[in-house]
Length: 406
Ligand code: CTP
Image 1: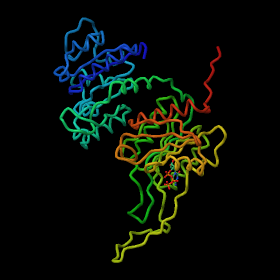
Image 2: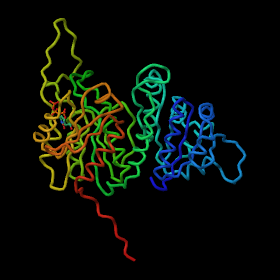
Image 3: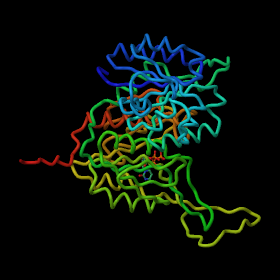
Image 4: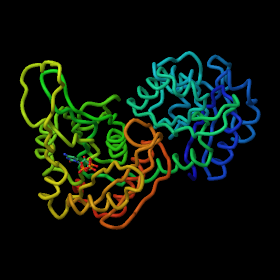
């Protein structure tokens, strides 16, 4: 973190006291730190605390008279290499998701061009409120990153999710974001979301995959310098900005799109939750309810991962995802053998991990070897950790850099 320019935005929640530890930790790691507070944050901790800890003046008033000329919010947004909002209240998350700019803190975010991290802190009920979830999804869609709150005792006396991540964890996320763009020149193909297999004209079989994990992988790969193609089925979250994106619906459509794009990619990450079964027969109309019920014959969908792994060239790397119930390590290892891919990311189904959650705990296998265990982190963090590991562990083929001769 030496000499890295970090702007901390402190908004008005009780966790503002933890931001003091965050600033201290950043300074200890050698970062240059400036602090902006919301008006509400000054009710919890005084600006003087942050001035002393950061060694810089602290601003909170958009219209305060200044000694130097220039527009403060633009100057701060341009100065920063990373912005961290800690704590990020539900109100601030809502304002930033909608582009509001009515105080210094929100105006800096609106003007920011550097990566912005948010560490939410709020009551469990608020964190689970659908409006907050929508706003978080909007910000994630805009490429903002979240350092997920932990579960534990909250200021309101209740226990649950909403507690701001510990300062060490936030510093860790910022540190990782400065790791060199180690996917420079790599062409990455990512699949995400679920597939839908038609039963008849109006009904289908599918699963609860939200698309979060695959999209987090696509976004992280792009931030690490890769050129990213995305093939995605139905999802619940906004599609990230990538180099090319193809929307599909059924496993057959996904297979076609992946098979077409695969020969041009250096790294394939099959994060999509392809439905395992499809109805055997065709029902072109809308089936009638009947009185006795119906029997549905299902057959397996084409295994896309196994099919492309069988065609991969020596310099192509293929990664699969396995979603298992507890103790799925052996199954993940077996899937690598069965499907012929290089790596397998194991996720376990639980309340905080798997399809619907915004957090995940993954284990990465290479052949028989366990090469990474992430612990419980946000899906965004898990994505960066997976890609970091794969890129440092493998010699990925890259598009050669153009040499300009004078
Ligand atoms: N996969 C695929 N095509 C399918 C099913 C799965 O390409 N028809 C891929 C997924 O994208 C994932 C990996 O295979 O990367 C593992 O998926 P998973 O559903 O865990 O494995 P299955 O082979 O379907 O085994 P299971 O019986 O455990 O569902």
